[in-house]
Length: 120
Length: 112
Picture: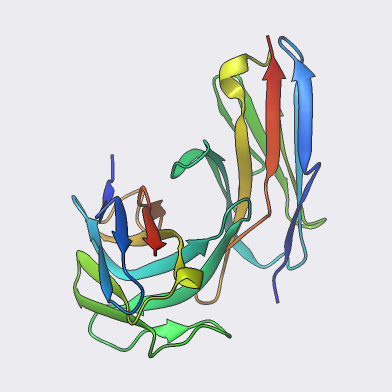
């Protein structure tokens, strides 16, 4: 089955530092990937849509200069939290929308296992 | 703007009971609807995916139905077990930008 990985699975950093989270589709290509954030005891909120080779589209209220997204290849999107602060502590989940190989699962979104970020 | 609502927010049942979780959405122009399970501190486990043209999907003790015209989906869990205890999320993918909007979830506790 289609697998999406995230690295790291958890990270603890000091306030003011930047943290990069990777999202990879392991056995399929994805033109579009999505980034979500989940605060404790809340549901997932879409942060941005990442398209390969173009700028990401951010949801209202999400600071694009703080959450830098790069979708440099059809299997990799990265989210960089710049100058992280304690309020950025959250569970970040990505998903990838399968483009290739084509078949019954084309256009299905597959979710990564998440990255837990704690900013001290 | 699509909104997804899940009822109830929390549910506690004795082992062996059949139960129904409800999900409603405001915009019927959806691409698909998916039910997920999330254990505390963990990621998402996809349970059932229903395409917009489908009415239901089944997997083991789980059955999910979709009524697009009324904006509703139900997840039926038969013969519940303590291992079913988790948060169940309903998510709708729209037809435009293929964004997925999640409900707030139903926290299920099955007592042994």
